[in-house]
Image 1 (cartoon, rainbow, N blue to C red):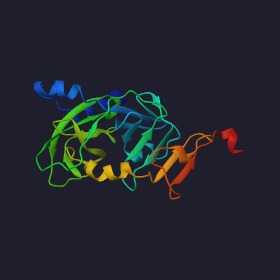
Image 2 (cartoon, helix red, strand yellow):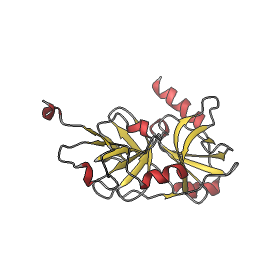
Image 3 (cartoon, rainbow, N blue to C red):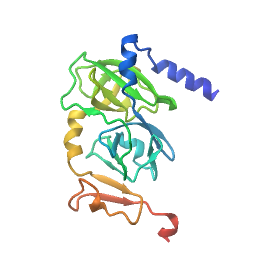
Image 4 (tube, one colour):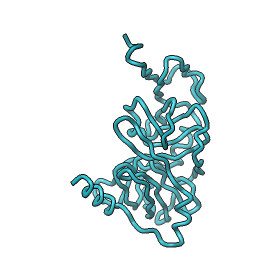
Length: 218
């Protein structure tokens, strides 16, 4: 019964790209973000960092992107977006980030990991920069929404409340200033890690959560 439900969900979300879109879509693949209890989607913004939705990793004690283990992750201000950081270059394809919003009826695409498998879809921007006329599946949170040039215009945060083929995003134009500033909240996984040693972390206004091994808590 579980496999039937998954198949129905995926069929409801998926659309078949036109032949001339298939090669373009194949070049733009997001990564699978996994925690100990859930999964989502993400995309590399530089050689050592991946972006995803904050609610995907907010309560995690372990985060992986395409099987690579992260050393820490942080929320971008008050947005439902997070930066996952790795100690070494992750080797993932780095995406271009677009600084201006999409226009109404502009063609956009999604590359996500809905229902545990990678897929692509396409749709159109609406007059609301926070809402895209594009179907998503469970597991697409954190997926990049990008334009015909492959530049990310926003990050998926939720499915539309009243329409299956609408989704909510945080526009990249709103996230870029936050990427350049210090994170609001950061998770550290080792007692040996110094928050001040991480790029972009300054001052005393960063809330830190230290996830210690159970033996070290006693």
